[in-house]
Image (cartoon, rainbow, N blue to C red):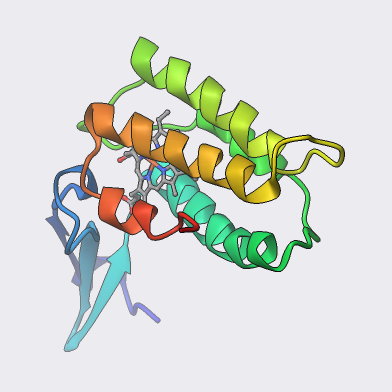
Length: 149
Ligand code: HEC
């Protein structure tokens, strides 16, 4: 779609999602002649987080219907290694809460638990929120919508 590398102008709009709940996209605009393309450019961690959000949005419906058809996505373990956006980095707080989150998310798929499915699901989502309160508050309103009231 691009005629030559020379005609590409890449403009970075750095709006960090952690600081704002609206306009969370960090996009680059690629200009090719008269055409402009806005391309979402998330870090590996940001993309994983978006995936975790999308997955839990579906899982919420399953939990509400009481029937889980999915498994714990092994992909989520990438939270321990994924690369962050430039302004962020891995630290002890993150490692602490990511461990707790993974544990809680796994429990949702536990077959014989005495704790209700809804409660286990909400516990996992609350750990998303707890971690976000420590350093990335922007997405919290969006994450809260995942909770089952
Ligand atoms: C251990 C801490 C931690 C946990 C747990 C966590 N997050 Fe995040 N989340 C972050 C950090 C840090 C970022 C910023 C990553 C970056 O910019 O590289 C982020 C980014 C995001 C974003 C913005 C992604 C973007 O588009 O830039 C969303 C949405 C998000 N998280 C949702 C969730 C959801 C949903 C869960 C639970 C299913 C969750 N997070 C669990 C720390 C966490």
